[in-house]
Length: 119
Image (cartoon, one colour):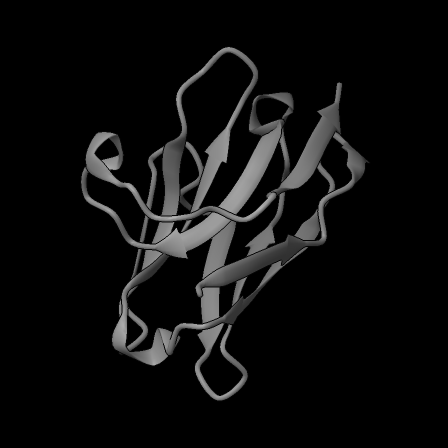
């Protein structure tokens, strides 16, 4: 059974930094593109960053240049370094395999980790 455990969220001020971690079990992440998603109150879950199995990364326009996704296949971990945080980054953050169409995804999600950025 796939389990994803996100951690590292916190309350920070605008301009602050956080590093999120995702521990995966029941899945060998090295064969998958992995991603971070977020869901703000009243909004749909959205893709934040994606990292290919070989390390290539893509980012949502809203976080480009501020966030960095990385992975450690040996530890089955995925990370998200978030710098220059803005209030609009406030959301619950989740990691999972990369899914092109979230509406069609029927896999499991972890509990996520709350990031709150105060203005």
